[in-house]
Length: 74
Image (cartoon, rainbow, N blue to C red):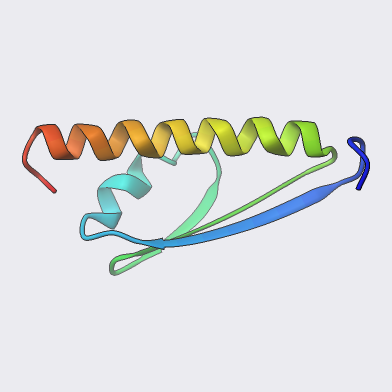
């Protein structure tokens, strides 16, 4: 693939407090949350942009998970 080709990723994960993690994604991407499963779907016109979106998404999820752990919610 070339850097300027459109790309897509889908991520599904399970978490005991999926709704709280999903709430952290509201401004980041399109997602669905059912019970303990969160599914994220993201696409972009370039791999470079998609990688940046992935990084932002992961940072947000990691920060939310740490916040849940620190407050004893997890």
